[in-house]
Length: 278
Image 1 (cartoon, rainbow, N blue to C red):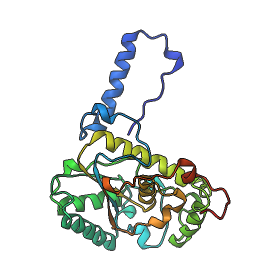
Image 2 (tube, rainbow, N blue to C red; image 1 turned 30 degrees about the vertical axis):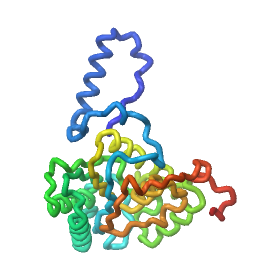
Image 3 (cartoon, helix red, strand yellow; image 1 turned 90 degrees about the vertical axis):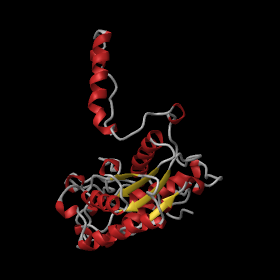
Image 4 (tube, rainbow, N blue to C red; image 1 turned 120 degrees about the horizontal axis):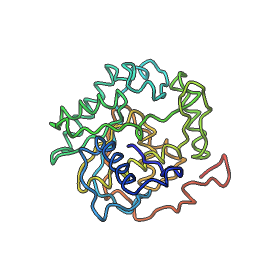
């Protein structure tokens, strides 16, 4: 979603009508991104916080099937390549996506209509199209997400073997603020906290635009979903990898799954005795 920056202090001399025209232009530019969303209700405009006291919608979390890069055992998280053919589903990934679609159909996820929110990453969008086809969902109900659901950027792990990601999770278990080592090819190096900010922003959009709906979130990787699920249920973010999603896995996040008891923020984010964090 596009963001609007604060006014330039050098433009404060403009006549008020110019400010109104500028605001109208910004709204016009933003319009294509909100075509499939409902108007905000008065009660839905508050700031979304993790873990939430309640959810306005029913959510299914889906990891897209295996990509061509994953089939080759290679880490590929640079967003520049997210629409590349090699970032698409492998033959096995397509089968995994089909099984996910059939699972959603079996449990009636879209019986009363649903919205599918995939990352614009090639494999996620391909998985979304398979889910839509199997569940009889019109393509107008597929809403591509352009940045909040990008695969977690793993920095210097880019191009290494998938097995090396275990090192990232070891660091995550110490602190959600530790970033993977950087790299100079443009691949982001994101901490768990960075991912948490992105998925919280995504949930804020979904919870303000829909009410009483079913939303299927399709992510290209596991980390977006594990961090999101940990945030929704109040699990210590250092333990997000305990919730690992396999390729093509489907999970329901129901409003009733939000526990009454929530850990205080200090318990969620701090490690008082690293590296032994419990």
